[in-house]
Length: 276
Image (cartoon, helix red, strand yellow):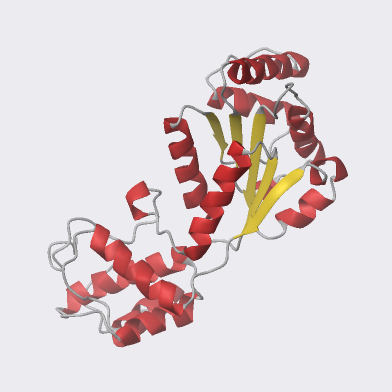
């Protein structure tokens, strides 16, 4: 709607996992390096934690995309609060293996054979579990221990990434057999003020922007209301661009950011000329 007004090729602040919008700030680059290291060095289990809206899912989806390109077999489980048998079915489904009308033991054997065959061909199987803090059945987590017990002579044939909010660390701690298998962990931190400005500029640049749109005061205001969380930054900046379009603004300033924040809170300005 507002793209042509700001001379953009596309919307810069959508909450989607388009790889070209992956911002390699310091914390995200470190997370990505550790994810790759956990696979190449057969660490078995890695924990990736961070506040909601901090970009964990974005990082994980791009990690899955890149490792698939490298020939790894990768399963991404987005809604993991499942019973043990449902969890195994979900993994097999991701690998496009047959899972219907099979017992739990048959499901495990099917998955074990798949993992060992991949290892025989020189590949590692990767399972990435997003929002892992939502798993309410401890026995589902214990299934991961069973999978991590699958062994080869020279290396661990499977790598598991558990991603979730900070409380995930405590959840894993309560399952001692799983906690003992954590080979690597990393906690994503929010962007600082400088990185928030770089993030906004990066997103605009990837969308075809050829001039400064957000003022320095606007960036500071964004940071003040988001604490550097990318999802919140996206929401505020996207709406600010829409409001600026409606007002005929030349730049996005502090005033527009404040209006966007109030709008998202439900405190809609009566003088607003465009409806989101």
